[in-house]
Structures are given as C-alpha cells and as structure tokens.
Image 1 (cartoon, rainbow, N blue to C red):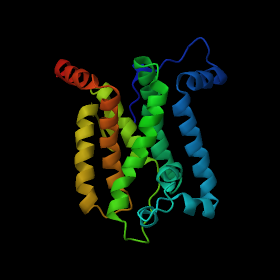
Image 2 (image 1 turned 180 degrees about the horizontal axis):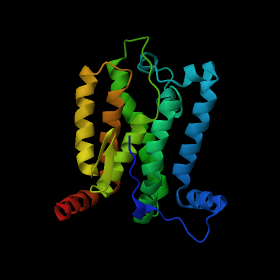
Image 3 (image 1 turned 90 degrees about the vertical axis):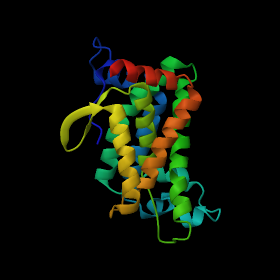
Image 4 (image 1 turned 60 degrees about the vertical axis):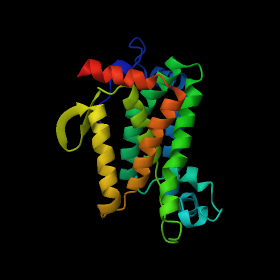
Length: 233
C-alpha cells in the first residue's frame, strides 16, 4: 500500500556494505522500531501455528468492554490473519517507522521513547472504536497492527507532507498530504459501506491518534507542516 521510500532519510554507511553493518546501524539508530518489527513478525509467525495463542491475543471487544482480556488491546497488534496481512502491514511499517524514529531522535533526546509511546498508545486508541461499536457482539474479533501502522504513517506525513507516495494500483505518485486526506475519506466511507473483513475504524482512529500524539509531542510541527505546504505549492 505504501511503496515510496524517501531516500533522503536513509542513513546507511556505504563504506560498510556487509549485512551485519547494515543491521547494526538499524539497531543503533532505530532500536525501538527494530524491536517492534521483530517482535511483531515473530509473534505473528508463531500464532499462525498455535491456535491457542492466536485466540488469546485477538481483540475481543465483548470481553474488553466487560473488564476482561484488557491485554488484548496490545497483543492484538502482534498477530495477523495470514501471510499477506502480515506482509502488507510490515512493508508499510518498514518504509515509515524506521525513518520516523530517526526523525524523532534527531528532534529530541527522548525521541526513541517518544516513538515507542506513539506506537503503543496509538495501537490502544485505534481499538477504542471497535470496543465501543462491538461491545455487545460476542462473535466479533479483531487483530493486526494496522491501527498503529497508520499512526506511524500519518505522523510521518506531518514531518514530510510533500513526500511522494503511491496508492496501488494507481501508478502515479502523489504528495503524502493528499494521500492522507484520500485515505481518511476512504476510511470514513468504508466504515459504513465496505463489505469486507477490514477494520476501517482502527485505520481511521489510528491515523488520527498518530496526528494528535505527534502534535502533543512536537507542538511546533503544526507550523512546520503548514510552512512545508506553503513552500511546496
């Protein structure tokens, strides 16, 4: 879904092309994004072959609204429905989470912690709509990191609103800010009209959470975002 990687954000040392140096740099520059990335993949793969973990980790709004399985508001973001679900979320995460953590780290000495907070809090907030909407639906479950990934993408858009992004299958890159508005508009429509198994509420709330949390952490980002748009257009 998100395929354009901003080259200016890559800080890979060309003098050390070995895979070890590449991974070492990722771990040292983006430790939180790396940990989340690895844990999500490992947990998802393990859950594919373990029905008990798969069942316990899923978000169950009926239980959560009654004070049970509260932990699933976080664990549901560590598992995925299938390989394609995992691939799409982790692909989007890879393209945006790593440069975003580097951006946070360059803006604040607490940047790594702030990135982790953005991800976890957004993951929880993105579930709230489902919990409220399906609190009396015993058979409803939700899973996947999509809400938190959307938060990462929209936080990134605040910092780099004019970065070109692609919406598959349309082969024409568009500014990230335009993509953001189109995505939110689609989520609002799909929430009430789409006949699929995608949790569009989580996507929408995750995106909004990402924007709000980023503004709380970096209030000056609003002025910077506007100045970028004014200068770009």
